[in-house]
Length: 107
Length: 461
Image (cartoon, rainbow over all chains, first blue to last red; front, side, top):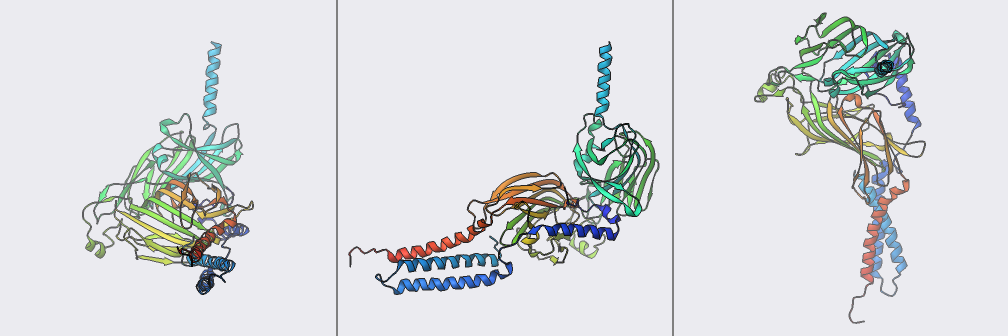
């Protein structure tokens, strides 16, 4: 049971302020040696990131549907369709994930 | 004949070796019991001397059976050094059973840092906390009456050792003490009742006393608290707390007059409370306070650097026996609480206990919800709790999230110490959630592709 403070033991009040500060500094130093884990992407840019990825995703979705509508059966290329579908779904998927995170639903 | 004598002497020797109480002696004992709030704090300073021939590695602390049930925490420290240069060394304390306990006495075993050599003395400071030990008498009071309680204890410290000199002090919250049992020499000075000094008391001596005094401090008792800590690796820790709160003092009888309560607040409802204080972590955001009806707006949040304070009021003031149920939730950033251990595992470092100040929690359940894909959970706690594992299904879950459930009874604010929950997690599992969303959108595109490509004409053009 190292470095686990046993709570607010009232005897602490008998100690001098200087030794209390020393003890607090020691526990802060111990905490700094442990590596904190955060989100891989900074939380502050979630809203911006969601707007941009969703915008790009919607643009490519628009391209996909326009391609479907304007091309005829003969000069339709399956590769083009699948490629744009994949890219659009990737952007839309990540965009909706960041949208969920930005609105507070931390999935 | 000789065999019988031999068996008898072996039996006596065995008896003496089992009862490990007879080679220690308490030279001086001073006990200060603080009765200011409904949580009774008792500080025991013992000067223990080894009068036997063998070194003593530990000693026993005895408690009467009525106190053992309500004992929430026992801590011991060894004091070395003098006035300004005192050092305090925490000692290991465990509950133990003794085979020859008189009258169902309960024991705690305190292990010394170094075994006490014969002739040596050591000074120990023991803190023990009792809950539900103040019995309201009268048990039912009207709105304008003050709350009076009984505290039952012994003027002489119960101990398996001989105590040469001892004194007990009781500190009451106000100068109004209706009565106290007189065990010579006992006297009262203002808020302090002094029993002692008593000389040369035999082991297991007990002198029951009752102190009947006024205690109007808020008797906030949380009957049940469920705290859910949800870890999300995308950057936040969401804590949701479900409270079932009650006033644990003298029950309210008669009517509740709002006019009296508001006009003569100092006399009316002196033992009731309407404001509660919760101490939250420093960088807290999105705090909500609501109950089954909806949001409760009577709250104030003050954020700070070391801690945040949420001062909130239930929908009505609480008198004896009244209940309030509510939910408090808040969010804290993940990097303050989740760390990486040297062996590669991740651990959550959070504070145990209840954030409300000066409250007793009868039944506390802490659920730590680990993200999907976490394996091998384990906990590190400074005291014993009941542990369990559950599964919770939440947003974008396939196999569910592992929940570590910690359950403890009789929790006091001294239990607010950090604890750790370790688990292994491969960062690649974080991509499972966006992958699920990507595949959902891709399915929509493939469906529209299929619709465009499928030729449903009966007649070929």
